[in-house]
Image (cartoon, rainbow, N blue to C red):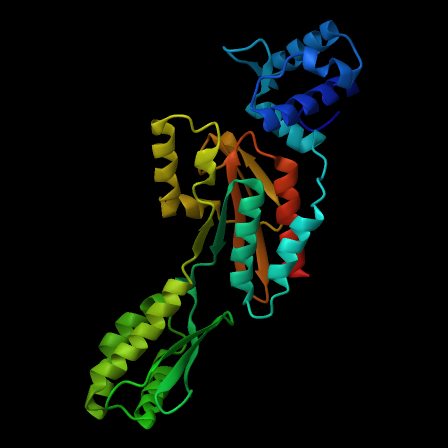
Length: 336
């Protein structure tokens, strides 16, 4: 007996697989006549099997056709028992590897760009959720001179994430004063959560620097900008193809579109997609916490301590085999 509790025979399994995959491609109810040649049996036999699959809750009738469409239960049975891995094309592999082999990209940027490619390939919405940077702590901040006028602030977190902020040396401030301020920040703020940095800069660091450096406000502005820039760049949610899902036939009314836009803009709701599970998991309809009318396919990644979630949001009529293969490929490549 296959997963799902009902013992279908080989023909019925093949019939259900064909109906699911045909409907995914055509978005049209599937009738018995279109399946006769593929199944090599009579239309009457197929109709009887369709009626049986409908009685089990795997198929549904529509009001506009005598054909059937997969139900949510049918999609789940297909994913658990009938879906076969789908190979990537050479062009798809090349596009992903071009990004992944680019040594000029940090891994977090490479992941976001790869998810953009996956979104383009599938025409679904992709999301990258990094671990919330606010929970990271400061390990070190350093000042590196580029020339007489420019410096770089290098912020390093306890997870090993590094961000650079280049700027002009504040007017009327010497390099020695900048280094002195940087050393003070390291003494006082190493181990502080990034979410608490700004308040500590204001109430603990600023009074000390004000007593030592005449143009202290310019020094403080430099460090405010460095940490604010870090937090902006490390916003933990990245969308690619955000409007792709709205182009799907399921979103055929202003009300449906408005509802989905509202959910995509609800960051608390989006964060519910986050996972620590190492497998690629599929959540169809009511199984996901985001929206009962969609499917969410997601997995986690961990590269040298940098953790996050990659996910695809699409209709329940999703090309499951393709999306699972793409996410598995990306996850396995970056974690190898």
